[in-house]
Amino acid sequence: MRQFLKFVLATIVGLVAFSFIGFLVLAGIIGAAASAGDHKETASNSVLELKLNEPLTERGRDGKFSFGGNDTSTGLVNLKAAIKRAKSDDDIKGILLNLGIVQGGMASLEEVRDALIDFKKSGKFVVAYHEIASEKSFYLASVANEIYLNPQGTLEFNGLSSEVMFYKRLFDKAGIEPYIFRVGSFKSAVEPFFRENFSDSARYQTVSFLNSINGYMVGQVAKSRGINPARLKVISDSMLVHNAPDALRLKLVTKLGYFDEAQDYMRGKLGLAKDKKPSIVSLSDYTEDKDADEREGKTTGNRIAVIYAEGDIVTGRGSDDNIGSTKFAEAIRKARLDEKVKAVVLRINSPGGSSLASDIIYREVLLTKKVKPIIASMSDVAASGGYYIAMACDTIVAHPNTITGSIGVFGVLPNIQPLLADKLGITVDRVTTGKFSDLPTITRPLTEFEKRTLQEEVNRIYADFTSKAAQGRHMPVERLRRLASGRVWSGLEAKGNGLVDVLGDYQDALNIAAARAHLKADDYRVQRLPRQKSSLESLLARFGAGDDDEAKTRALKTELGPLYPAYAQYQQLMQMRGVQARLPYTLDIQ
Image 1 (cartoon, rainbow, N blue to C red):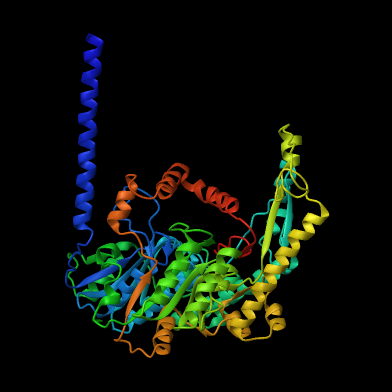
Image 2 (spheres, rainbow, N blue to C red):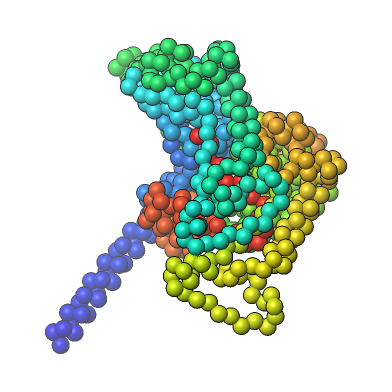
């Protein structure tokens, strides 16, 4: 009886404790919901601080209720809206770029940089402070009126690079034989599986587009800093910047100083006494709700739908991190059938993915084009499958440093029989109803007939891809295929060869869409698709009231930490179903 009473007492205590924790969680959710729409008032004579210490993505992820998670990001849309708002906000007198290692693509940074240049037209100041300045953070900071670098800090300005890991030796040791099916001498996405280094064609194209992007960046910095471009190229190529004094001597920065000295500069611009602390407003406190800037002053019923396609292209609904063919086809279809939507902008930031999924989305673009204008706006990357979903649009707009093209397809099928038999001592036997019933299989070698059959299917898909691209680009298919073969181009190169129509940014694409729909600037509102989760929905998902896959991803990110990107790449490989239209390698430009 005593044990029974102890058990009952322990159960009651446990229930009370659980209920109390549940109450705290519920209180937190209610509090979060109540404060989600709150906006802090900006004090007069303030400075907007931009740290950009989170990954820069198209729409961003809310970090207000992340509880220590590492899955938040800064939205390019909100960041540009905040800078635009600050330009005309009488309470904001300047912007502080407090930058370190900026995580973003070159085209995204270009849009932020252009927004900062536009901000300066108001007569307000931009000041930058660095302790460690990466190439990308310096690119942003180069537009500032004053650039402070910590006297013991460093500034990287030595050109761009991109490195790739090759797995041939690993596969050889493990006993994995990859069967490769591809079209195009430049379709090098599969080279890491059967080579130990770049092929000549892969190296050629990478050198070409990297130099194009780097040359554009150097030209823009030269213009902002008032340095001869040829001289700046020598500084970069020869890595003449080794320390802070070098950066000052070469006029890349204007001052060597600590943060308090940057504050002194701000006090002077704000007209404050030395003992007064400048009012500095963070981006998160200054940013209004997602759509406030698009609603402001527009009471019209006309809409331009902006559909954000970011991540790998996959079949099905996908997740928040990729482009699910079902979800995005529905979004485009919704915009097409909505009479209030007069035009569509397809905003793309994708290295590609499934050729089937890309074709499903392409079809919806093609149908939309027949009834209303649809404009492609390319961000950092719109390559292979990313180009596929853009090529039917009325107009393709890209940045000079967008990575695009890569018109080609491939397939990979590994044979792991040597791994199983020779390394693990596992044998496989099978029973089939027909000669090819087990195809595709990874536990036996392919016959020559099977290899030929799979290659013919890849050839067929490539022919379909290039024919549709030629139709969209209004050029002979023979000429299009000379530009294809999987070759990657910078936006500047793509504009020169006809794969892109206009060099510009998101706003340019929006303006073109409005003009095609005969809408004036004040005669439409922007409708963003697909719909994002609200802050409350994201918070509920953290407590199991949402997407199980999303909760699993957060747990894995927390558990694996810096190893998560390797795991994510493995998962990406495992999800490559069918023939792929994907960018060569995982390009990380540094």
